[in-house]
Image (tube, rainbow, N blue to C red; front, side):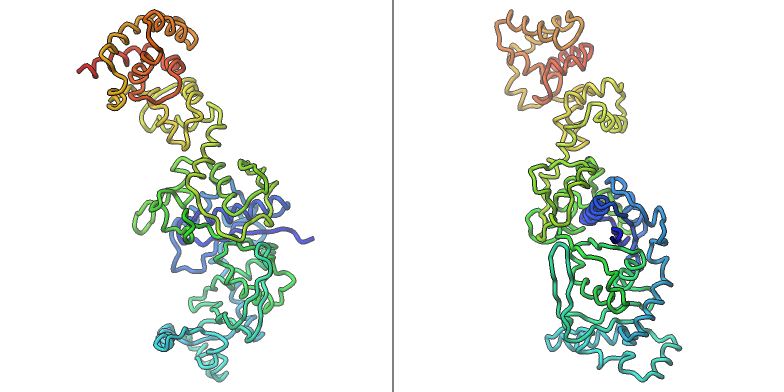
Length: 507
C-alpha cells in the first residue's frame, strides 16, 4: 500500500490567512489519522511577490496552532531542499524533458506584443487565450523554423516555455470531495511552465515537487481546482500517471453573510482577525490583528477552524487535536463554502477558557498584570481566577472581569449610583464597617453569618446593603458573589474602599 504523504505548500507573499491554516490542519489530521507524513514546502517561485518575514510568520503561526511537521523547510528531511527557490536547477531539466517529448514549446512573444493582441481581441469584445486556437499564429517554436529558434535561444532572446494543451479532449479529475470533475481542453490555455527569469511557474514546480517528494494526496483550497486539469495533463506528459496523487479541493471560507470569499483584505474591516498572528506589513507598517494577540487559545482556534467545512456527524463540538485526528475524514468535508461565524468563534474560546483550572488561567492573567505593573502573588491570582473562570471569553477578559481585585475603583457608575444610592446608604455602610472589622478569620462563611445578622438587626433586605456595597468594591454592579469577593480581596482593602466611595459620592 502506498505511504500517505501530504504537504502544505504556502507562498511567502504575506501573512497566512486562516483559510491556509485550515488547509494545513486538514492535511495534518489526514496524515496523522492514516499514520502518514506531513511536509511543509515553501512555494516561492514568484519572486516578485516575495515578502520578507512571511516564511517565518507561516512557521510561527502553525507552531502556535499546534500543527507540527515531519519534514519541511525549517526541519529538513529526506527530500530537501523544501524551498522551491533552492530547487531551480531541478525544474529546468524537467521543462527540457517536456520540450523533448513535444508536450511543451518555446514562446518568444514579448509581454508588449501579447498586450497588443489582447487589446485587438477586446476591441472585438473577445477574450484572447494563448492556446490551441491561437498558438499557430504566434511567435513560438511551433511556428518558427528550427534554425531560427536555435539562433534566438543562443542569442538569449526573451522566451518562456509553455505547455501544449491538447485539442478537443475531455480531461478528468477525480476529486475525493467533489467526485469526478471533467473539463474540456478548449477551456484551458497553454500556461507558462518556465519563465524568462529562469524560475518555474507554480504549475511545473508543484507537479515536479509532488512527484519527487512522493506526495500521495494533494489536499488544497478550492481556488486551485481550475488548475487541477493542467496538473493531471502534466502527470501524463511526464509519464507519471501511476504516481499521480489523489486530489481533494476544500470548500471556500466565506464572509459571515455568506456573500463571497473571506479574503485577507476583510480582516479588521469586519471586526475580527483573518490571520492567526498579528502581522505588520514591512512595506506600509500597517498592522493587522491576529487570533493569538486578540486573546484566543490555540486549541479553541483549531477546534473552530476544523468545523469550517467539516463535521463529525455527531452532536459533539469540542475536540482536542488528538480527538480531531481520530474523527477526521475527507468524506465528511463539505463541497459548499463555510460561513465564518464570529459569535461561534467566541463560543469556542469561551468553552475552552471555562475548562481551564485556576492555575492555568492565572498563567494567562499574570503577564497582563505585569504589563500593567500590577504585582500580586500567584496564590492570590489563582483565587481570583477561581471566581471568574466562566466569565472570560477571550484572554484579555480575565483582567476586564477581575480588575477590581487588583485596583481600587477610580469612579462609580452614575446609572448604578442613581438607582441604588439612597439618603440612608452612607450611614448604613458606615455602620457595617465595624462588622467587617470584627470578622475573624475573614473567610466567606464568617462574612456571610455576620452580614446576615447585621441585616436582620437593621430590619432591611439583603439587597439594600449588598447593592451599594458592590458599588464601593467594584465601581459598578458587576462581578462574582460579594462574599466570595470580599474574602479574597481582604478587609484591609474592602474597608478603605467603602470609606472612599462614601466620601466621593458625598462630595
